[in-house]
Length: 104
Image 1 (tube, rainbow, N blue to C red):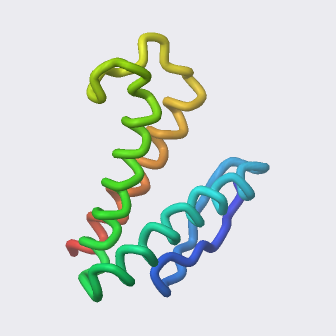
Image 2: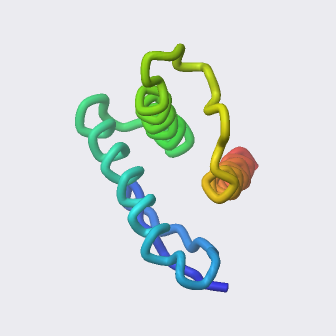
């Protein structure tokens, strides 16, 4: 199993992934880091949990807009790619685990 350390909002997060997925995970984290940096610059300091939630909402909004293609934003794709669904599920699990740790 691969591991990477990513930095978001000035904090380092060790993450596990499948071997070979390390570059992809680093790229994904960079997108979140960019969102966090933009939020911090425009809105100022906020809690880490709120900052990551706002960044996640921005990414989700972009995803819905990209999927929309003339359909309502909340319409799921008709034939979701199983690999993409698996990755999104894994990311959701990681986000939920992080949120639980932050709340503890």
